Length: 396
Image 1: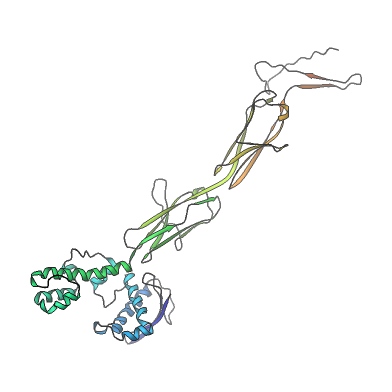
Image 2 (image 1 turned 135 degrees about the vertical axis):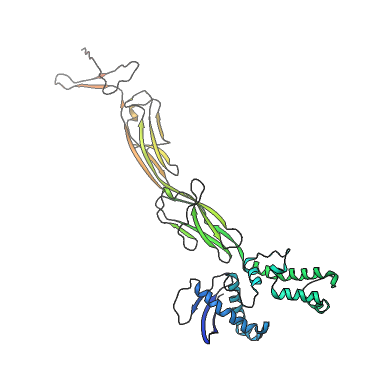
């Protein structure tokens, strides 16, 4: 739920009003000065907090004690102003004027080691005054010591334990608040993308933390180093026209100044259509009764499914190799190699002519006779342009 409030502050005898809409301490506060145009790029937010946070103190903590508390709760001002103060702390803007600088630094930076405190470095002025006053008159502060959680014996013999205990308890409270206002980043990226060349790829990165983390996309190089930041909007990086160069591992890194940056990776695999790069034959001539084969060379990502199809009959043979152990005249015909994957398909056709002998026909009116001439070849197969000498002996 958003809280929208109109807040005015008196500054330099002028009343300036602002309209603020915030969702919580870890969300970036958006400010619009009434009657003024502008885009909040940080300066307006800082100016707003510098003006309004002191006004909140003067209203709610006059004399270091809240006034009109019931009224503020009833009209909704108190929670709205509390969120404004929390936003100031969480976003490291000008510290609320009713917080000591060291307390504010602890809330923002959390660098104080409560187990090893020093009065000069870590205690606020009021804490040092209380410590000195307890050392001077412990009986006077007996109720304060007990109210602040000390459970040991209240005596000057235990004065160091008392001061150290009260100091640790005082620092532990803002330290606990620090963890509520500031959380280290966590990141979740989209799953691996397996697409075809030319497709659009969207990589999303969702990051949580207080304050809101900054998100950066990079691509891992072959040597393990990251590229420069890739252009992204609200954690989304888009590859509009993917190509083979888009293949690789992409890394989303989130950081918000709390703890170390965190990252997760996702992969992009870009496929390309199947391609029949060539058809190869075992010999230039297919001779009946001899072995013969066709092979098909293909490429593509992912791996293609390949088969041979006889065009006339539709008979299909799976695999890149079409093998005939004893080819016959019935095997004559056109054969098509088909390759396909999810990104596309391709094909090429090769003809097989099976030779077994020569036919001779005498078309003269006196006789018409078909003569089958058998060619006997011993030890080798003749190929074009070899010269072949043949003789024919016809007897009636």
